[in-house]
Amino acid sequence: MTGFGLNFKPHDTQPVAYPKNASYLGWLGAKKVAEYGYSGPPGQLEEAAAAVSGIRGYVIPREQDAVHVGTVRTYGGRAVPSEGCDGWAQRELNGNAPGPDGRVPARPHIYKNLYVLMDDAAVAAYAQPQVLAAGSAWSECMRASGFTYPDPPAAESDGRWAGRGQDGAWRPPGKDEIAVAVADEACRLKVGYSGARKRAYASAQEKIIAANHPTVDRLSNLLRTRYTNAVRILS
Image 1 (tube, helix red, strand yellow):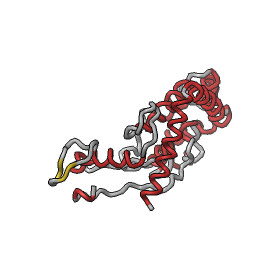
Image 2: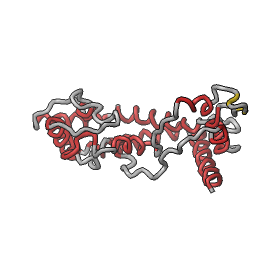
Image 3: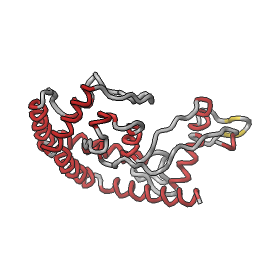
Image 4: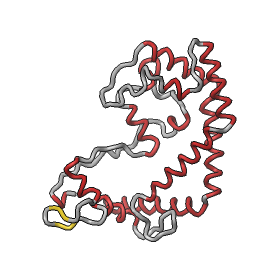
């Protein structure tokens, strides 16, 4: 990007401090809900999202996007790489490793097929009886505290506070949100909600891995290759 005269600001790649699997397992312990509600402290929503993949989001300036993704063939008299500077960088990282589909070299961004497998496992796990039973037990616990929700996601997505702070302007939670969130966390701990999800998700992931072994092996090799090449490039 710099070679095209575009000052592309690198995004934040510092390690993510938020617990990696907290969102995946529906664990609220890091959010300090008694003080901050479902959003957690200022800035934690973004960290929680980054914890899932290890990558923080970043904004590509509109005037740089065409060179970044390669929707133009030339810029400033210079040829733009196929699929832009991003495609060029992805190919440098992938090297000659095969993609999960067996194609050599791997196509740019095909490593994200791992996220598809993760989503498949999550969907399968969420429908497992032990997770549904934990959700029902949680709902009964919440009802005893004076709150009526069918499951934990319904409490978090209550329209009275859903999306608070996601516009980049953090705002403190109201008393109603604090009351629900505190009861919610207590009930999740009481019924072992996160533990039930952990067992169900682990089982679902093992089944996905077993059913997609060649694909997963190639993905593992591709990710290791990308890491090795990233270290080489940065050094």
